[in-house]
Length: 175
Image 1 (cartoon, rainbow, N blue to C red):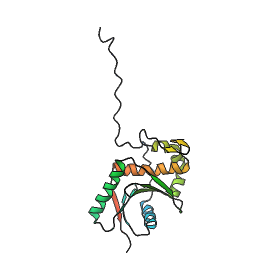
Image 2 (image 1 turned 30 degrees about the vertical axis):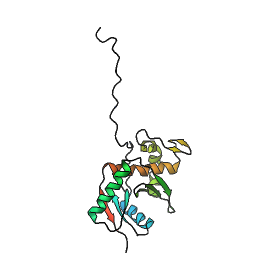
Image 3 (image 1 turned 90 degrees about the vertical axis):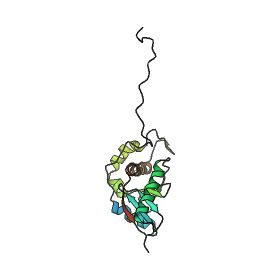
Image 4 (image 1 turned 60 degrees about the vertical axis):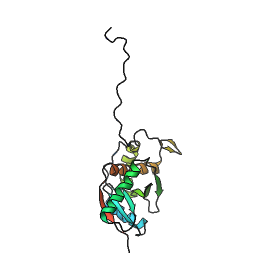
């Protein structure tokens, strides 16, 4: 009977990005020279580190060649991106937020940049969650205070760097 009793198939789901990523890609640019200066300060100048194009930092073993340092940094970021990107945000004494991940990878939210762009961060922070991601906070599922919103903003840069990993600077330890 021309398919009248044929069971209708639901439309196929659109392909999902794997690993999942946030929808929000902030257009706010944090000055890399300030991120480098802050990481130099936070490490007391004792560590080599690589900086990616959006400001994500990978702490390196000291003394690697430039080629080995870049490879190490990209592998560390790859490992964070291809696992669940657990984060440990820390409120620094200077007011910045250091967002630490596994494999010695971190993002930094500069306090004055966050304040300058607060209305956008406040408005867009839910778009900073990866597809189908649920984060449990003291406020509930995917409910964030100002600190959490700024942390999610900073984490977006890690996702952006992980999807297009370009090391733009290698900082060498002092001494």
